[in-house]
Amino acid sequence: MPNTPPKLLVLLKSFKVQIRNHDNLSVQAIGAGCRRSRRGLITDSRSPSKMPPRIRAPSVSLSTDVSLHAHCRTAPLARAFSTTPCREKMSRARQQMYQWIKSREGRELAEGGRGPRYLGPFQDQPFPQNPLFRSQPVLDEQTRELIWDKVTQRGESLKAVSAEMGVDVRRVAAVVRLKEVEKQWQRDGKKLAIPYAKAVMSMLPKTSYREGEQNVPHEPVNEVHVHKLTMQQLFVPVSESRHFTREDAAKAFHDGMLSADARSPQPELIAMEREILAGKSRDESMEKFRDATQKEEDAVARRIVQQQQKEEKMTTRVQTDRYEFRFKEVNVDDAGRDGRSRRATGWRYGAPLDDRKRGVVKIPTSVP
Image 1: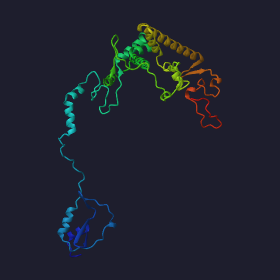
Image 2 (image 1 turned 60 degrees about the horizontal axis):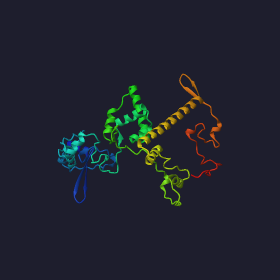
Image 3 (image 1 turned 120 degrees about the vertical axis):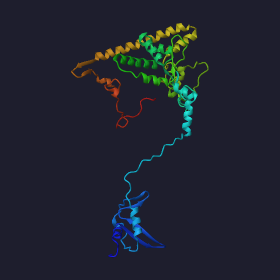
């Protein structure tokens, strides 16, 4: 095109102009290497084969080319951060929260007291919206120290301490063991988490026991576990002249079931109460109860010592530089007729079941 101006030639090389004749005349400009988006012109990666063919447009004016070239600009490399100020308005829920914190209930919760700091009105309900969850009380530090002193220093029996303080005998034994560990750590110079313990204790209801005062029992000390066989309803015919006892009731549920008195954690308490009902004084019955429980614990301690001495006598120790080997004499007959006796070697690790073995009689030999 000899008559075309040189500036127009440069613009025609940079843009392709396509003229279509439909209802009206439209001009579409596709930039070489750029396209229009929501925020301006960005780079177009379409292949040249998909571009429309070039046509000559000598009738396009120079002003159109200049305006198209002005719109084809590169996008900025980075966006500026927003400088919109934050909203100073507070939500309604946040306003209500601050109002409650400044109220009397909020100040009492922040200041705290002797008991647990719960939002609700109850001392044993930590979650106000869940009334079915109740927090169980725990023994305070002075009560646990008193239990340890009674058992280890004064030499009282576990059952006597349990009956006197209203704490289950298993909890008494656990308190004594944990206190022994705590005392041992203090002797070894180990650091205890005292602040953490105080923080946890401040959030729980506590039971206190003071000697010489009227105290509330912590829990039932002679509660009998409900056996699953007793959950059924039975109709047992009994003659009118016969006195139906607890032993008869246990036999009605199962032949091998013990009565409630025999399954009681502390049958000595039942005997003491019966003596009191028979006419004996409470002090005399209590002294007899202490003697009976002390004799029982002494017998258990002697039995444990004898068992340890027997095990030590049967064990041969060989000391080396790194290890200590222990050897015991084993009798093969201890395994029993089927080889599954608890006196056999390795019985504590269990034995595989014979349910899937061939040729093994799987007929039960006893009725549960």
